[in-house]
Amino acid sequence: MLALVVTSLVLAGPSVNASGGRSRMARAAGAEIRPAPVVELARPRLALHPAVAALHQRGSITVTGMTGASAEVRLLGATTSAGKQLPWVRLRAVGRAWEGTLPRPALRGIYPVQLRVRRGSRVFQSRAWLYRVFQRGTASRPTFASPEGVVRWWVRFVRHRVAVALKRWPRPTFDLRDRRLHQLLVVAYRRAGDRRMSHRLGMFVTAVRDGFDGRWRLLEATVVP
Image (cartoon, rainbow, N blue to C red):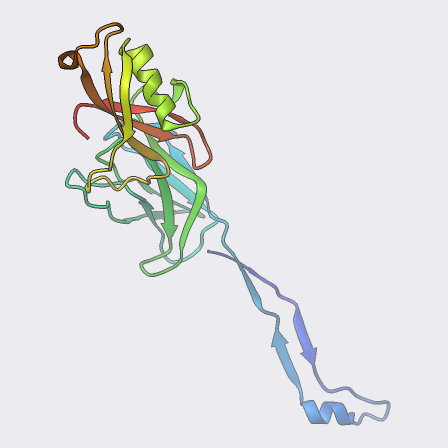
């Protein structure tokens, strides 16, 4: 936490008249010096490297504008392979900055970054602090206004098929990724002109959003949720 201390003082001391005596107001109030209040400003800034990480790749973080005896970072919704939220990671002081290694999520996705000084202290978070764990080429895929648009594009241009049924699918309990940034859908598709039920195929498609106010693009397609 960055603290800006207003150093001006409010002086309510005794007033002295020409003859050197105290005024009645000064005698009633007495001599007092009161410091102005402290105004606290939360303005931590961070840099993530790499900007887009591959799955299981080691990433790092540098934080400035955050003072205190310690600092910790967490990727919200990032889990182990067993589906447990990855813990807070202690950062080390380097000059006026804090540096450290980011946790490595078991799933691809986009993760809000959280900061705090210590356990139980205020948690800092910004909508702009997002750590991306993507497959190579994900950031260059086309974007759409909805997750459904992502799936229809995948069926048509990646699988070269025709979608016949599509709906959103509940996330597995082990998946703690932010629902505002990730959506899981299931789609049934077929070859153009082939209407046989036995020839239909299905796939689970995860769409990822490019920020809380961004558009959607394909994250991955899997045979299981």
